[in-house]
Structure formats: structure tokens, C-alpha cells
Image (cartoon, rainbow, N blue to C red; front, side):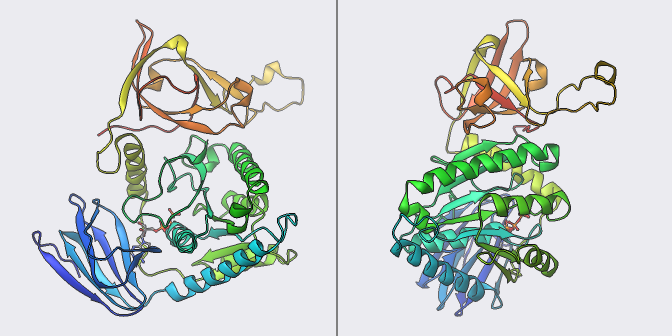
Amino acid sequence: AGSASASTVKQVKLDRESELRIEVAYDSPLRLRLVTGTAEIFGTELPPQIWLNFPPRLKLAVFSWYGATIEMDGTTELDYTADETPMVSYVNVHAILEGRRNRAKATSSNDSDSSQGPRVIVVGPTDSGKSTLSRMLVSWAAKQGWKPTFVDLDIGQGSITIPGCIAATPIELPIDPVEGIPLDMPLVYFFGHTTPSNNVDLYKALVKELARMLERHFAGNAESRAAGMVINTMGWIEGIGYELLLHAIDTFNATVVLVLGQEKLWSMLKDVLKNKPNVDVVKLQKSGGVVSRNAKVRQKSRSHRIKEYFYGLVNDLSPHSNIANFGDLVVFRIGGGPQAPRSALPIGAEPAADPTRLVPVSINRDLLHVVLAVSFAKEPDEIISSNVAGFIYITDVDIQRKKITYLAPCAGELPSKYLIVGTLTWLET
Ligand code: ATP
């Protein structure tokens, strides 16, 4: 383990059903290619002979079902091969899901229940490999020509868009091992915080809204309906986190619950769902390759996601710096806000801040370094139920001239003047 020498090509032979686990160096990329045999990265097959360029810090596994030779060029934090993996159990789950998709497809689309493909939700503690398993399941399905919907409810370490959001996107091709999920046209709802405890009711409201939109889409699209969905969740599984898992299972009408790496959670879910015969609760082993991340690493990776949104994966995009007048933008915060003082309330009433109330936010220096979402709403009262077009980052607020400078991924006017602010900030480095 641990090759840390200068840029030299290293060959690795993979036996059948084994994987090469790699942590790319912190400050330099790694080139890798498949020389002989077949291999895949999290469900996506590697093209033969072509060098792939992996960015610094990425953690990945190159898995081979039948054996392969891999070449690496560059330095790694760590690399080793492992022949004990849960991949066979994962691909068995995939095979069962395939059967259900085929059955759904063969059913007349008038029958809404049996024409619905599997709705899979992946749950488990932090660092149990939920995102990775979700990714494999959608990539394997896409390889077979399905267009499953990938839903990410993880507002901390989601893989569809920036942190603080829940989102869904159809997966039409196996996910690119370098680029990840294409950011083309996901359906995104902005929560604005990286932990749901900031506003649990808002989180639930957005989950409901996302589910409602997908339900509508499935009703008119037999192909998506039969392919079903794979839902990735947060690693928070205690207390409110557990309650939110149940809420998601219920709201999306999940039919398969995959529990990674925790017996206790599996048995709790199995017990509460025992009255729902159409819901399977399946226990799966966590892969020994999953890399644990502490709070600092998670914070860093959130920061990277935001940077990637504006600058691209390898600094290949150039965001536009735009200037707007204070009067051109209308900023709202959702929930919280100043509560009515107790003295202003009827006797016996408790001061309560409506968690989904829109609170107007005045533009001032507090917005500096804040990431805001641009709503698709036409009117303020549509903001909570609207998905967002994208994000801007405030780089300057000039109080005297009443001008605000912001970074956006593209030039031109914003699709809406309605912006949502939460607690999401970013320090450009
Ligand atoms: P979270 O707690 O954020 O929800 P998670 O349970 O979704 O995390 P993943 O994101 O799937 O966990 O995995 C954590 C990290 O481990 C990722 O960087 C992923 O690329 C890496 N990883 C997963 N499986 C393997 C493997 N078999 N070999 C090497 N790295 C892996």
C-alpha cells in the first residue's frame, strides 16, 4: 500500500471479483486506464486503453468481475487491492430490480400500481456507502437501457448539485466516473442549510414537493415509471433523522428499502414497515472500501461542490461576475424570522415562528459570501413550492451605490428576481 513516488506508471493486476481502491493525492490528479480485461468504477464500465484523469482527493474503486489489468500514472494517498467486497450482493439486488422493471414495463400503463417500477431508498449511517450504492444501481440500470430517476435527499453531501438542496434527475447513461452526474437539468429544491434540524418542517415540505413533481412526471411517462427510482438519503438515522427517513419512505412510496451497514436500523425499519407487505426491507453489508470522513473533510467537500458549480470540475468553467441594483433583486428567507414578543400575543398563546413563512430580507453586507438560490417562482407565494434555476454567490455589496456584485455560472439576466437565502456560505479560495 501507499505508493508516493514521482510520476511513474504502475501496473496492477486485478483478479476476478476484486477491486483496486484508490485515494487520489491531495494536490495532484491521477491518470488511470484499463489495459486488459474488463472493469468498472461504481457501476460504470471503463473504456479500454483510454487514460482517464481523476481530480485530487477523489476516492474510488476499480472493480473487475472477470479480471483486468489497470495502469496508474501519478501519485496516490493510498492504493491497494481487495478481494473481499459486497459487490455480488449488490448486483443481486440489481437483478431483482431488473425483474421488477421488466414486469412493470410489460404491464399496461393504465394499471398505475403494477406499471410502477421499483422505488428504492438507500438508508444507513454516515459513511456506509449509500451514495456509492445508489450510483451503482442507477448506472447498472442505465447500462441496460433504462432511464431510472436518481433522487438525492442528502443536503450535506449530495451528488446532484450544491449542498443545501434536495434534487432529482433522470439517469440516461451510466454515470461518468470522472464527471459524476451531469448538471444539465436536475429538478432542484433549495433548503438552504446543510443540516435538516435548521428547519425540519421546511425539509419535509420540500421532500413532499419533489415527490409530487416526480409523481406527476411518472403519471405521463411510462418509460420513467417502469425504470423507477433510486433515492439516496442522509446519514442521520437517530431521532429526527429517523423520523425523516420514515417520512421519505412514506412520501415517495418506496417499495424497496436497502439498509447499509447497520443491523439496528434494519430491524427497526423492518418492524415499523411490517404492515406494508409491498415494501421490502433488505439488509446489505457495507463495503470495507468506504472512506470515513470527519466534519472537517465534509465541510471541505461541501466547499468543493460549490466551487465546482461555478468553476467546473477542473477549473474549466468561467463564471460571470454581474452587477445588479438593490432594487432589481428580491431576497427571501424561509421560516424563522423575528418572533412576535410574548407581550403582543393573546394570553396563553406561545410565540411560534411559522417554519415555512417567507421573510423578506433586506440587502446589506450580511449577504457577502452567501450562496443564494434563484427561484423559478413568478410570485413570492410560489417560492416554497417552486424548484430553483440555479445559484449565485455574492462577492460585493456596495451600500452607497446600492449595487450588488455576484457570481453566476452564466452571463445575462437571472431567470427570476426572487432569491432565497439560507445559511449556506462559501469562502472562495
Ligand atoms: P454520507 O455519510 O455522506 O451519506 P455515504 O454513506 O453516502 O456517505 P459514500 O459517499 O458512498 O458514503 O462513500 C464515502 C466515500 O468512500 C466516497 O468518497 C466514496 O467514493 C468512497 N468509497 C465508497 N466505496 C468505496 C470503495 N469500495 N473503495 C474505495 N472508496 C470507496
